[in-house]
Amino acid sequence: MTTTAPERPIDTPPPPPPRPNRRRRWVAAAVVALSIWPLASYTQALTYPGNASFAVRTVEWVRDNGGGGLVDLVESIWYRQGPTATAPDPAGLPRPSATSSAAPAPAPLPVLQGATPVPGEGVWTAGQAAPGGTPAVYTTFIRPDPQHPSVVAGVARFDQGLTRTQVIAGTREPTGSAGPEGAQVPAVARSALVATFNSGFKMKDANGGYYADGQVRVPLRDGAASLVIHRDGTATIGRWGRDVTAGPDVVTVRQNLDLIVDGGRPVPGLDVNAFGTWGSARNQLQYTWRSGLGTDAAGNLIYVGGKDLTLASLADALTRAGAVTGMELDIHDNMVDLFTYRHDPSGALSTATKLLPNMPGPADRYLVPDQRDFVAITLR
Image (tube, rainbow, N blue to C red):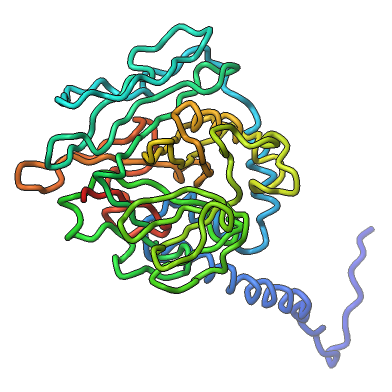
């Protein structure tokens, strides 16, 4: 037997079409509205003037928008494992230089005890010479970590009697706008350029201040590790308020955290980092790119930078290089680089050489506008 549906009366109207879900529309509209600001902010970060990699722009945008704790956690996990190799990667070692100098080179730095010496370890190579023929910079590499003999730190030593030091502001750091140099080495200074290298942490993380052009741009902190540039172009590293203070002779002060080398020795407590003296908790234990700056007993300026360094091994590297006072500069990938320069007979730049071949920065960094402040060394 078959059945049929009951017929609807001919005058009964059809059921109305289903109404759209208003709640969904409101939710979708809210999602779109809430996405506009982050998208615009991120786009601005990616397109902000000045050299910076996509990764650096992204990480710094996350930090600047409430994600600092997350970034710190990820970095703590990512960098907590030390290197396992027993010898340095040859690709990360400087190539022997054919450059010679009539001036005697400084005494070699001590090699790592208990490990097979690496060719060139601790042996100084002459760089750009002053008009009289004396090298203004010498470079070498050392191994500062006995527990990890594959770790290499590059070292550059600048004769401050032959050079001048200048901090050049970037498009974002330390004050949010470039200085008169345009966030790069000025064209008029390039014929005398000896080297450039990275500065310190972003100012919001540096626990210190910045003084330039006769103005305190970011308030200076008593006790902070300070790079102080004097009117004669010499640089001093010291503790603000104890070793260095404001005065008519001071043209620039760039502070970053606290000293890590004092009196020729690493400062106690670097492996503990109590109260976040040297940055976020446990960052002192991370095996990562690090850099530092110090002065030796003769007044030479000493830069150290390398991969897989902890805060303690960075301080050890500075002391092994002869620093009596030293401070940490910037850390992590794409933040640590030093370039030395050569010139052709006309004085034009001919080559730029990384302190270590595996330093990640492009060779023309600081010759084009950069987001971060940096240090330029020129001949007198």
